[in-house]
Image (cartoon, rainbow, N blue to C red; front, top):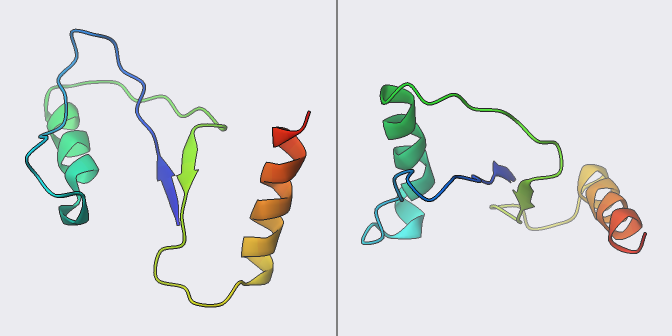
Length: 74
């Protein structure tokens, strides 16, 4: 699962810290920022990759790991 990460400046609002991470706290922050007319830019190297609900590695998972290892040791 690919999850974009936010990079925001100091005056920008924080996500609700009391909301458990399993309840889509980042989605709630994204929604609120959209409502406040924030502009989003996508940086290709700022994604958090995690297992999600998959149990066995797919060819795609293996390719992602190889890609990460290649860029980690440059």
